[in-house]
Image 1: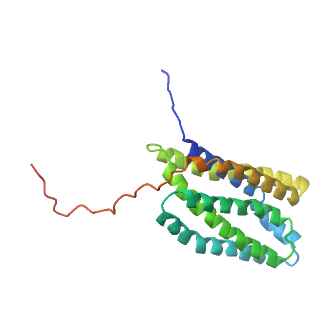
Image 2: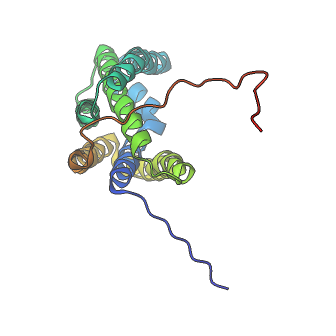
Image 3: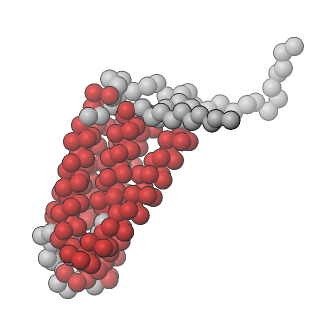
Length: 218
C-alpha cells in the first residue's frame, strides 16, 4: 500500500515562514548567552542590568503592539501591514550591528526599548498577514510550521551554533552574522509585496448565540 502525502503551502506563507526561520535563528545565536555579553563587556553592568534591559524591551513592545495591530486591522488593504512589517524588519537589521557599539548601560537600555518598538511593528503586521494568507483547510498544519519551524527548531539551531561560535571567536562575530542574515532576508520580504491583496477581506459578522428555545420547522 502506498501512502501519498500532498503538502502545498502558498507563496506568501512560504516567504513569511522562511523570513521568521532565519531571523529567529540569527537572533538565537546570541540571545541565550546575552547575559554573559552584558555582564562581561558593558562597564558597570550586572545581572540586574540584564533584567531591566529585557523589561524595557517588553514594556516598549507591549505598549505599541496591541494598539498598532488594532490600527492595522481598521485600515483597508494590506499595504499598511507590509510597511509596518518592513519597518520592524529594518530595526531587526540594526539591532545586532548596534550591539557592537554598546559600551554603557544606558546605551543598552535605549537600544532594547528601540528594538521593542521595532518588534511590535514587525509582529503586529506579521500575525495579520500570516493569518489572512494561511491556506483554507491547512490552518493547523501551517500554524504548526510557524510554531515548530519558525520558533522552536530555529531557536535550537541558532542557540547551538551561537554557543560554539561565541566560545571560539567571541560575540562580535555573532552580531555580524546576525546582522548580515537579517539584512539578507529583508530582501526576501520585499518579494511579498506583489502577493498582497489590494483590499482586506470582509470580516465575519459578530457571533450570535443560539436562542435557548429554538423553533424547529417541520
